[in-house]
Length: 123
Image 1 (cartoon, rainbow, N blue to C red):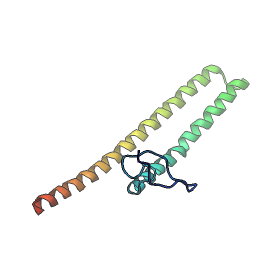
Image 2 (image 1 turned 90 degrees about the vertical axis):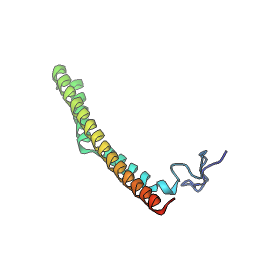
Image 3 (image 1 turned 135 degrees about the vertical axis):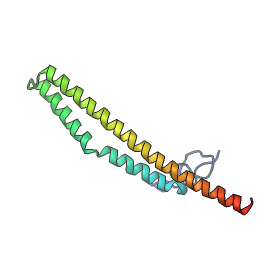
Image 4 (image 1 turned 180 degrees about the horizontal axis):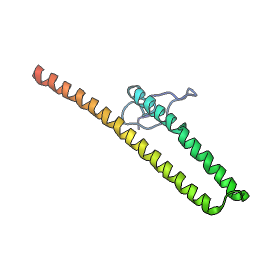
């Protein structure tokens, strides 16, 4: 079985079994895709609204345990926090869909140009 031709960070050879020459992580032609994916992941982890909600929930939890916050009020606050989180998730999905649609439009343009060149050149 063929293995990836890439090299790991420790200098060893990648052990991933592949159909071609490289696995996803080492394929030079997919470097830009990996960079974009890493950028999106970094933005998602550092979303200030999510951090704020997590802090509020942590404080709410502590407040209930310490008796500073009534359980009924905490339940309502938790529902609001969950609604905010769902709204953030919907926004993220819409943003992702818009980005994918943009990329698809670009790919369709490239394909149309290639087909026109092929038609004009008579292949």
